[in-house]
Amino acid sequence: MDPTPSTSKDDPVIDLTETESQDKNSNSSGKSGTKRKYVVTVPEKFFSKVSSGERSNVYKCMMGCVNKTINVNHTSLYNARRHIETFHKPRLVEFNSSFGNQRLQDKTHNEVKNDQAPIDKHLVSTKDPPTSKQILTQAELDDRIMKFIVKDMNALRVVEKEGFLGLMQGVVGKLRVKKRTFFTEKLKKEYSNSKTALCLALEKATHICTTADMWTAHKRSYLGMTAHWKGEDLKRRSACLAVRRVKGRHTFDVIASAINEIHKEFKIQGKVNVMITDSGSNFLKAFKIFGENELTEEPENLQYEEDEDYEEDEDGVVYLDLDNIFQEHYRQTSLAQEEMVENENEDSDTEITDEPQEQIKLPYHVKCPCHLLNLIATTDISKIKNPSFKKLKKQVDRKLQKIWNKQSRSSLASDFIKEKLGLLFILHNQTRWNSFYNALNCVQKFSKTKTKELDETFRHFAVNPLTQSEKEFIAEYVRIMEPFTEALDVLQSEENMSIGCVIPTIKLLIEKMEEFGTDPTIIHCGPLVSAVLLGL
Image (cartoon, rainbow, N blue to C red; front, side):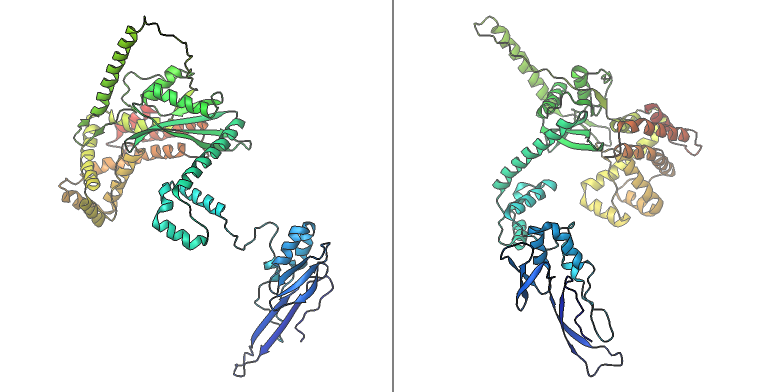
């Protein structure tokens, strides 16, 4: 049988030279080993063959190019297609369609199809990018390293570390990994470009919501602000506006000035229709004095202070930060001295110039619903005065706090707990929402699945094991607070959450708490249900 398929003038020509060698020792299956060499040519309507070579043929363009020739490999049509895409793009679809249904078949006496892949796999789709590896330029390498630093929040000195340099030298070849000074300057440029792009996006927005929060880390204080708005497609857009150092105490005037400065920097003073913060007294006072509304009145007996850092151990001892007290005394003394100096210089012949002070104006303020729910789960519950509930909770807290302290302060204790229980306890952290619930839920799981090991762990650290009443208390607490923590998780959703979801969520939570209020199986935590309902 002639192995060369019949072709028409406009069809792609496939010159197939086939050498077959029959294995004399083959079995009755009749299979033969074949060795094939393929030469793929293109239709004459596109290219005319000029000469042939060992690995490629030379073709002349027949579509208007003057003395334009290209080399086409025997097994790939990439150069031909690239020429058409570059110089004759309107005929690209016609060229591809010539090979769309063509399949290379193995013409053997048994007419068994060849396993060779179809020719059209060599054609680059008009929609998908080429699968061939692109050459990486120095600029592209610099951009990718910059993204690596920013996205993973790596220090700039990572580009000078021995391990990173060894990795990159084996990947980038002749390209050069630049020094930290280069990426320091590049980071400044990238920040400037990102800020400009964000300002342009905010300029198109008509209504913007911003958020603000303050925290302390590594003995430094920070103010973080974000912005949220609807795009033209009505999808939510979010961006980080700033993370700024705040020196000194977190007083209301410092906070108000910082917020106003960031709003002014991004030119959104008149577009921010609402701002959301936590319920710290410093934020409340800032919006009470400089805000548009007076809905955030500061309670008289507010005990939650964002600018006071304290710790309380299991014995109820409160540690005050004396440094803050001395700084406040020094500030008051300095102000008094400055007033005395100003009074002495009132009659001096100095020129007085009236410089207009910048007016601080903050937008409408809304308390963070998640933070309010967290206060219910912490502050309101701690104020429960029921004697039996208070006593039982104190006993549980004391025992668990001793175990948590052992785990967090001793590696030997952590190793023992891990060996005995298979997992470590989830530690309670006052600054993390749902932290106490997660910690008690972990203890409850251990009490159900590893009761004996849990008791042995308590005895090992000279702590009396949990009694049956205490285990029941933990189980009831977890059961009651589970819907509460789920509501917090729902309200913290990133994309599909809005202020319109707050009231329905709170309504469902109230209904669930009312069910617990009439549940006869709730024995120890009835006051907990009442406190949560009162807070809601």
